[in-house]
Image (tube, rainbow, N blue to C red):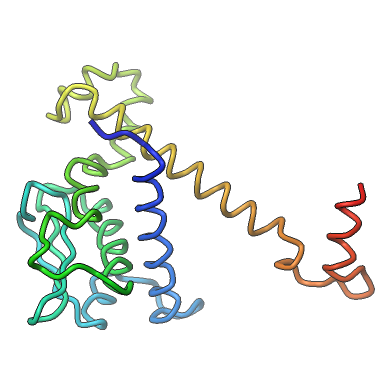
Length: 193
């Protein structure tokens, strides 16, 4: 059972942030549309679709042969792309575990059963008013897995929205308005209110 606890969310959030930093560096805004497979090749990361160790959905390791990402063949293509982007971000961070750590790596362990079900599949079945037990049966997953998965998606989405709104509302992040108050004046005015 996957719980959308803060440890798991922090792990995913860090991987997403690292992936974003990599994408910004290798794929500046305004260039050709992103293809994560091409990005991985450009960074020298081998991508294998098969069976990650320990039944995980994805494993991301670095060893003497270089960096390698193994994605479960059973994953929906959209989920596979999302996991690959996160794995690229994970491999770009300092202190990435070597292959000898295998499934002991917390990033890999977090995907043992998380994010296996595409969000679109859950949304479609919910729109069709299919009950959670029936969704589990249709998708061939353990009891309550689909609902746990949906909670994780919601929690990740809420966290992303909160972070984005905090960045937007920070006065020092907003561009100054010509003839308007400076960011410092704006923040002082807000604290006085």
